[in-house]
Image: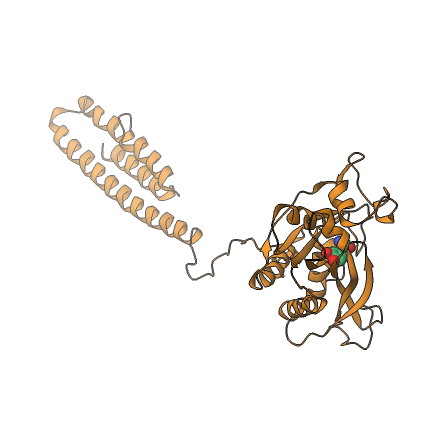
Length: 339
Ligand code: DAH
């Protein structure tokens, strides 16, 4: 009798000892103490025992049960503590580690350039207006004193949609549109996309950005133009950046000029960037041609004006020392995140 109980206890203790996880221990508990457990079966054998021995047997089984329960509880506590410690270790979070910064978008250098440039002119009293990229031949060329035989109208250079509709090759058509729409004085800048049939390379793209400027009023002189543009260059490129004006030709201005800035790379002595010139061209300008004023019904004897147009890509590239225009369109974040 004693032996039977003792055997069950021994097996139970070794099963408890061998349980490596709380789940395994729980299985052992059911196997030992459950409805069909070994100890329960032992208890059922009570009937086959002599009545006078039953109390002793009962007491034996009970103390065996108590012993096993105690061992189970202790083992459960130990396993639980070990498993908790292991989980704490494997799920440890270093609250002192630096946070991971989400990537924050930035303004594209071209957009920033357009904003900076227009802002300078807005402070000088210009209004910002925009116009259509699909333009008529009339506004893009005809109204700008660019007659039919002019080389700029060649299909080699211009994207024509049909005979009289095209993708604007310049922002200048907005000169005529604005003058038609307003009474003088007119004082506007026009940022926007323009299109030309150019192959992509380090300095060309079939689509790029220009900013046009136009001022028409009484007694506007070339000196006004020079003062305004020199001021712009100082504000945009900073400090005492020297500028110069060179005579040039545009159909819609007379006289016409190009404005150069002193090369920032070599300071004027000549280098690869300025092609040994010492100066870099940044925009075209001039006094509005009388024919352009006439085309919109303005009287050239009463009104004069100046106009200018600049390529935004070029101006931004010069400001930041970017040597390939394609970088501005490839959307490589390694490049863009530098601005
Ligand atoms: N539209 C000219 C171009 O695309 C740039 C230009 C030159 C604009 C002289 C002007 C100007 O308004 O007066 O090359």
